[in-house]
Image (cartoon, rainbow, N blue to C red):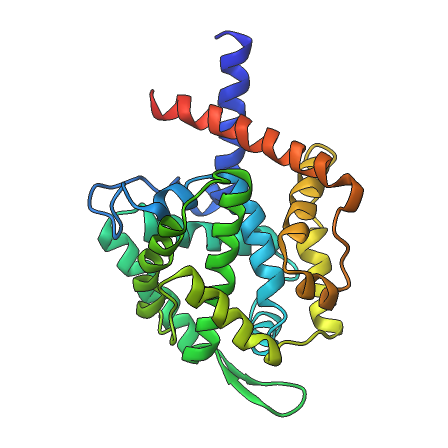
Length: 282
């Protein structure tokens, strides 16, 4: 095997090992002709890019955690603070199953999430009751995540993406959101942007949100080899946040270093696309 091929295979293997828990017997989700969405869908383009999904995923989590109800569910009912990688793996796997996987696999994944949500209830420090299957809360999680994934793709994958394709993306991912119990569910870019604005009055920061943001941007499992990648992805995610969300979190945009952050992220995205494109032809 020549050195270039060895490097390519090593990159693919590292990504697969990151997003699949081999200790639990997980293997990459296989793309199916009987998926919930066709291979020609915009969602296949958006959800199929490793780097932009990492940027969008981190940015989306930072946005989601500004909602005290979403934050409470994570804080009170998960080991998120001790297992950041596990949380990211579960989110990535669910998206892969409901985008690319066999329809039966996707439906099973949705049913499993619904069972988990039905069992999650609690009370905020101020006495407000919450439940994870609240349609409006699920609507926030959906719109914060889907818009972040799309914006990550536009920024580092398809800067010239048409408004029609952006609308198609929201229409395509709406069905899964409804099956999870979300209401309302945006079906266009304009509706998604308006819904984000509608939620702004409900968002707030706290010691808990600041702690979760710190863990998202500086995961404890960092190694010397992955530190530069994590730092670049994290800063790209912060830059992607709306200015008001960065301000609420107390985070700074790249400023004069923005071109360097963008260049490094584009470089990572291009390298991984090259690696996986060759893998798909095998």
